[in-house]
Image (cartoon, rainbow, N blue to C red; front, side, top):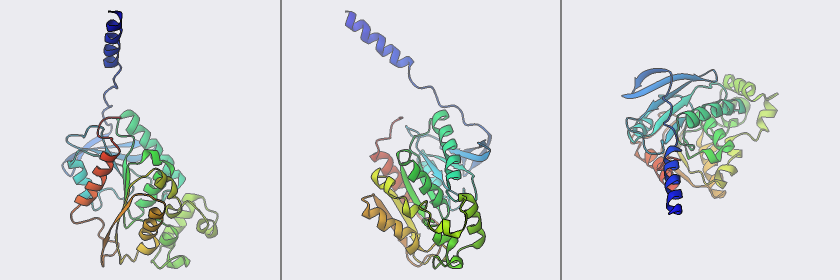
Length: 281
């Protein structure tokens, strides 16, 4: 009889000890593509979260690296499927340690206060890939999957490129100067010798088996695929990392994404299912 009594107490105690409900999202409320949007500030930076109408169990979310609202059909489909969508604005930091620090603060708020999944899915369009890959390299255990779209995976290629004699793309001297400042590089030589590029930081992701999807045009004149996406594909595959690619024949840097975002959504949902995160952590 005593044993039964003890078990009963534990069961009741377990009920009492369940996690509290997520805190309501703060900030100004508006609507984005038919969904509720919250705009607020985190660590001095502008941030936003868009809520799905019916969140999935476990509260998965997709995190935009840059250019929120640009070519958003995959983002919208994820919202329709029950994913949250998030973004924090740390422009002109190019995925530098300063940018990652800002992301870490935002991550803590969303996971601890609002109980979003501890493994966000990352969406990196163009230079947004620098942010996503920097986060994933620093936090492979806090990354569900990474989708890069014509992504900058080597800053020598962009914003370096032709003007710096570092690639075949157009490059941007103005953005290169901003990159040097963001990373506190003393000069071009320090940037060129840096190992903070995504193409040089793939081993932690591969070891953690973080899935990567690369979508790119094979005629990109801004972020040449042979200096970026294809380098990631080849190196990640050689490291044993799970990697897929969708090549768009004859396509330039724009438009990003796919006319049918189904393969992108399926990629994220497959990663969510394979990680066994379909229930709350």
